[in-house]
Amino acid sequence: MKKLIYSLMILFIFLLSLNFVAADNQVDLYNFHGKGCQHCAQLLEFIDSIKDDYPNLNFVEFEVYFNDENRDLFERMSLAYDTEIQGVPTTFIDKQVHAGFTDSLKEVLIKDIERCSVEECVSPKDILNNFVPKPNIDPKELTIPAVILAAAVDAINPCAFAVLILLLTTILASGIKKRALYAGLAFSLSIFISYFLMGFGLYTALVASGLTRIFFIIVGILAILVGLFNLKDYLWYGKWFIMEVPLGWRPKMKSLLKHVTSIPGAFLIGFLISLFLLPCTSGPYIIILGMLAELTTRNHATMLLILYNLIFILPMLIITLAVYSGFTTTEQAEEWRKRKLKVLHLIAGIIILLLGIGMLISIFFGWL
Image (cartoon, rainbow, N blue to C red; front, side, top):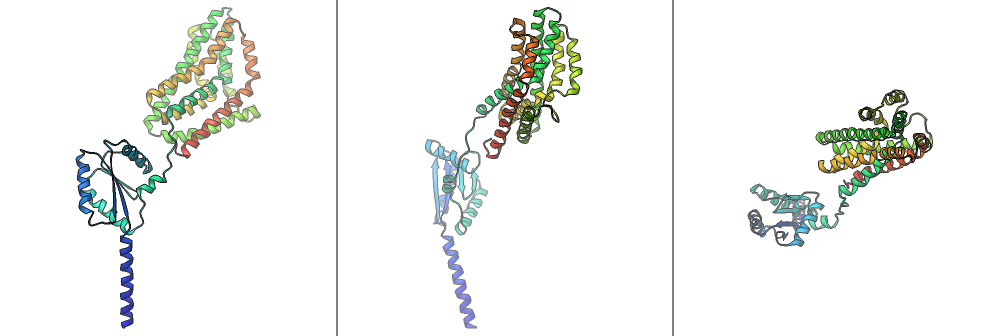
């Protein structure tokens, strides 16, 4: 019986000694405060009042109102803890961040200190040293080149070329070249207006829905598919399907264009034809709209939509002026379009595929 009692006493003393050893864990508590801040002063007074109770507490304080280095450290520490700065005082202990100071926070801090005295906690200094910052990507730096590239892809789309050439051929049949010039300009203007309004409407709907990030991921996947489909048209044109106006729609579209004989008619028909063009021109546009909804403000998005659609109609304007000036004919333009058809799909496929891959990589690594 005595041996059992002695054994229990030894075990109790051993466990008690472990507790004392564990209780000696250094607890690092980092605090950022400002001179003249009332709540900061209250927190510092509270820490002073408990220091004797917790001799293992390593309290490190940084004044940020008048010290630029401490302010920079505060920003880096907040990034390392994946939190936004909410003012001072802000306290970092283990993996916890406490902003402000209240009576309830006193109890929370004491519990954290006692927990870290007996458990293995991470020092804020170690969290900061092990933090690898994300690349600082300015959305403007990302979206402007993407808008220009996607708009260029959309602009060289053979669908839009075919429609404009057919319209100019119809107008030129009247024998009045100036009418063809104004009709081509009116048609390009109506395409610009209709595409801008459709894009702005979809952008607004995406922002209002709050699903911009989810849509951004979906658009990234869509971009890869559209890019691959365009590459398919380069390698096996006409097989399965084509990334152009559906074949069944073309007779109706041609019929509408052949009845256009005036400038107002060319302007009005542009709005209707834009609906026929959507299946083969909406891919790059939707990709850009997804990016704008996720990365930019409304004003910036509006300016980029204007830029996109100006680039989109630029080849229409060039062809119109070239035909009017006699530099080329509609027959020659159509022959060039057919000859370069597969190459245009190749260029579009590569650019859109790279945009989609870039979008998904940015999401995967958390750059956006």
